[in-house]
Image 1 (cartoon, rainbow, N blue to C red):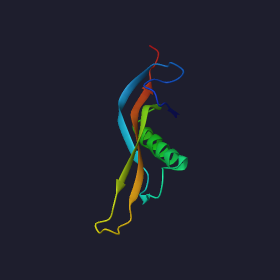
Image 2: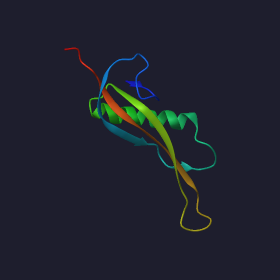
Image 3: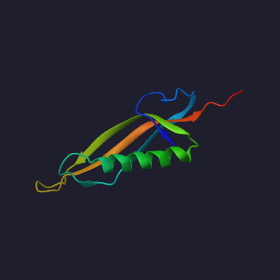
Length: 94
């Protein structure tokens, strides 16, 4: 499955939009910046989600970092990576 961070595929292939998809990684201790491994895990989960809808690619991929802290003052801060994008099918020749 192809993934693009722009609104179109690099090869210029025509597509038909299916809809927006979103996937998140597991919560982890927020002790620094998100790693490349976490972003890749979010993309892999996003591709699996898009495949369930019959997509051939995901375009306009974006990342978000979600943070949360425990209820008490000494609670552990947690973070997860969320990837979202537009699931598309390749346009079929008539």
